[in-house]
Length: 236
Image (cartoon, rainbow, N blue to C red; front, side, top):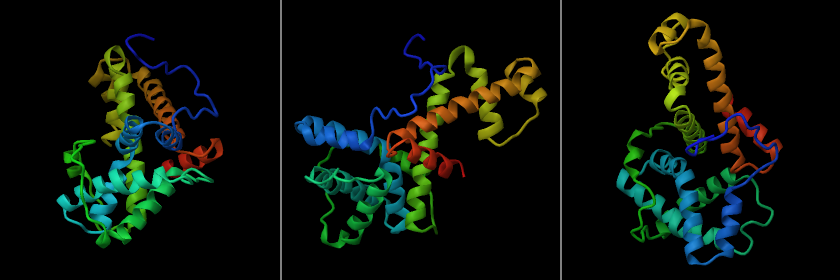
């Protein structure tokens, strides 16, 4: 394992949850202002997309208003909610907590002065590719949550298959992502390998992706059983 490359052959710890949203909350609550800022920005980077999409399409708000509301939700509403003394008492799945807080925030948005401290946690231009018109708020949030989770796992797969293993990702992308479904001969010719190596390459990429998905889910699941339920939900 070199140059920071992850060891994909090392088995994931079955019950390891090294950094969950709730552990970030606990760290932020126990730390100083800078530690709280870091924890909140980490939560934002992971979960802003489902929040943005739900506000934009579920509540039918204009783009600029959506951006301002989402920033306000994270910087003020969520920050205050997480700082409450009982924020982590008897907590459930973070996805459910975040959805419920967003619902409460939007139900009272007429009483809230949308504002921002001016800190840009993330470049919202990537939100232009998000779309979920005509879908219920609850479904929008969950669908976008799943999509952003899968995107992070696929990006991680691509990063870890760079260099000499790039052909594995190219095969996976052509077959499973782009939907071309070319036969093994065509895929082999495209990436310059023997046709009999295509099926093992696909298996390897899917195995890695599943592992990354499980590790992404571990960041917010309650325990191993909950992580398995989330994986089943994610994969349908």
